[in-house]
Image (cartoon, rainbow, N blue to C red):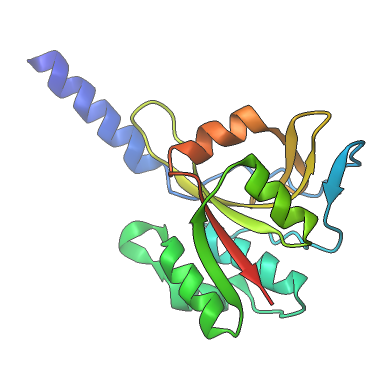
Length: 184
């Protein structure tokens, strides 16, 4: 019984110390070249501020369309302090209220590739946590390389990460493969 309480206490302490959009900053990398696939050019990297992964992802996508709204301005509308983050539904509503077509759907690799082929970067809701610790996060996916089996991702901390689909899908599947599609 004491072992179980100790384990629960350790899990609680560890999970409390991990903010939802935490990450180690390593940004600054450019877009990788892809041999077989596509990278949407002109998708800016917005380095997220603490716990602003959702607002930073939305700022990146809107900036791609020429609308320079800061992550702080977006956070005023979508960030929920009690959650230490933003709900995907609030982000979808923000995009609509800003004059965009927006929809949240369940996707798969081919759905991401289709949007990228159409010139539309997508926002994915993922869970970067391990074991029983959930760490929700948002990525902007704006390219893919079928030869490498990888997607090109802005993580909020780093630009142009070539993320193997298996790793991406492992994080994405935990959030029911939700993707936010925002179009002008």
